[in-house]
Amino acid sequence: MTQGVAIGEFSRLCHLSAKTLRYYHDIELLVPAAVDETTGHRRYSTGQVDDAHLIRRLRGLDMPLAEIRRLLAQPDIESREEALARHLDRMEAELARTHDVVMSLRRLLRTPPAVPVAHRMSAASAALCIGAHVARPAVADWCGQTYPRLYGILADLGVDPAGPAGATYSTEFFERDEGQIVAFVPVLPESVPAADDRFAVLPQQRLAVAVHAGPFTDCDLTYGQLGRHVAEHDIGLADPIVEIYLVGPAHTNDPSKYQTEICWPIQ
Image 1: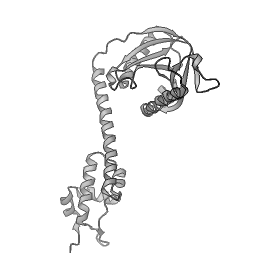
Image 2: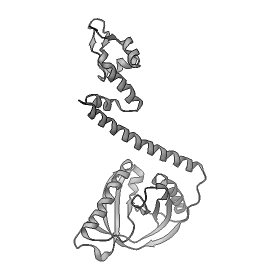
Image 3: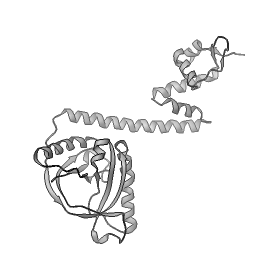
Image 4: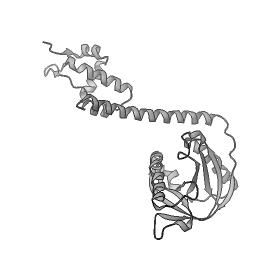
């Protein structure tokens, strides 16, 4: 009957260094089957080899140690597979984000074409609005939940949109990486239900306008060109920036086809 194997032998069985095994013991991720009270020597059971292999592979997938601990605590294979699937989904999302950033960097290294800037006076207009204080990393998720809500409310009321959806971004949002965002869908004034405070009137504004073509991850490039133009030729106001989503996720699954109107309030 085996008395277990010493840490050196166990490291050969599972391809984890003795230093790593000691660390996993210290954080109670992979606890030896026995520890000699006198010498402190660790001995592992051969039944722990599978867990050691699993830990090594999960670390190769950059799964956090806390998640690995929770996965190992799952009582059956099905539960472990579900936990692993959730991590792989997150990895795929991160891979897609990394790809977008790399493509954005490649475009940035090229000389970007000049973005035409137009000026217009926007008319006051009625809109269904939902606002919230949002951190920059959460904007995509917040928008992904908010616009379906807006269109769902309009459908329930039997009110048709009167133009493309948009959003306003407060100065605080840009200065602090979090702030007030108001998502809106314009409607005809006569279609607004009486005493429904979910509807508001967007104010008349003079705007410098540029159209950003492509994914949202590159919007900062158009912001830069538009903001430079405003700084050099106009007097910018601290009012919220307005984005109008002429072509967005509701219209196409191809971010390269997005068309976003960026509207900078000016005096």
